[in-house]
Length: 193
Image (cartoon, rainbow, N blue to C red; front, side):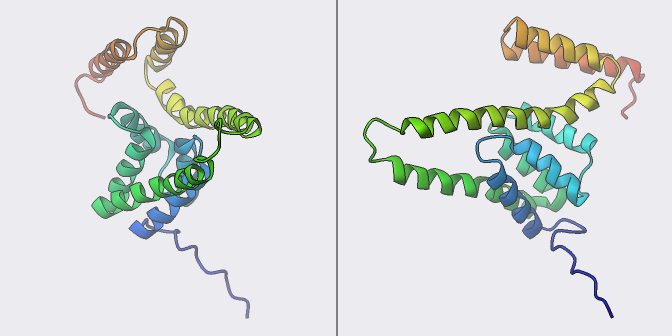
């Protein structure tokens, strides 16, 4: 009689251990950047969060002080498994990078003149790849924002102000956030959706 393959330990409802494994995997695959994109894919693959829910947490993680990836891990961990989930997610996201940096420091500490040119060139290439991965993390947020009334206009104005005109982030953020909240509040008649 054929037997089915055993269920993945991370299938079904999330557990703190499942979150630890997930974020360890995300951190290992995302060393150098792109952690939010890897997180989104991993969450979606397990059915733990859809793009709209991820976009909310990703946006909030960017608005709070501190490293975005750690903020995102803590928020998702807390949402899915409470305090223990937040702790597991943060440990998972930080541990691989810490180990990699300690190893790289131990190897390169004694090199005269810094890193060899081949390593510097490889790091430049990795930076380009990391930019592409970061853009894939932003796409779900843009899709969700474009679906909101006046969202496309706010996206375009924010890109113009920050990307083209190079205005300071904080004033632009305050104006766009205030405008978005005002537009959404007035169109919903004061209701909370």
